[in-house]
Image (cartoon, rainbow, N blue to C red; front, side, top):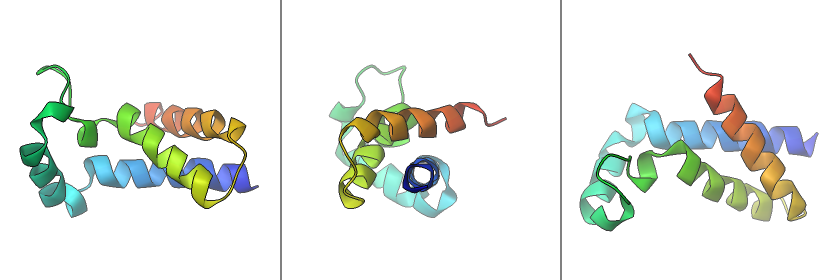
Length: 87
């Protein structure tokens, strides 16, 4: 049950940070202050990329919930799978 909560938590936290209007000003500030975190001009900035940020959010949830390291990939993969199911 903890793994399912962690997957949905990572998905929601990543979605809110990368796409909500709540963090729009914060994202714009981070993009202005850290232009080097955009690897290629055609790609999104780190803070706007669900694939990039989702990994770090999953890592944080794994550490906070004191889960085994092997659960990191499960949480990350599950949360990213949920992100790909949006329409």
